[in-house]
Amino acid sequence: MTFRIEVTRTWYYVESDESETWATDPHNTETSEMEYDADAKLEYDSPVDWAVAMLGNESIVQTPNMAGFPALQPSGYPIPKGIESHWWLSGTATDNYTNEESEWTVRLVSPEWTPEMRAEVFRRATSN
Image (cartoon, rainbow, N blue to C red):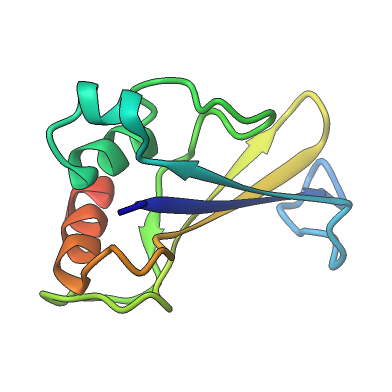
């Protein structure tokens, strides 16, 4: 069984230093996947514990430009007992040095995630 987390990060230029308005077109998008592999199985008791640790920045994500997730929010409220694969977590962060804002979208897409496992990850990763 392969538990995977899909992460998409999109960078936007901020139109003005005085405004939080985003440009309508992203200038860069990167998609990556993290996998609950043999090493992760040695460190974490379950895929849920692993996913929460990765989303909580417990360790640096081993993909360029993906480390350091912002506070994440679920795509819907309240979080039900079971969540289907079309739900996602997202968050934004501003980089004051580059005049950019980044948006992260996180999905638990592999079929091994049960709806109950997704709901647990969402609750723990968003502290809800």
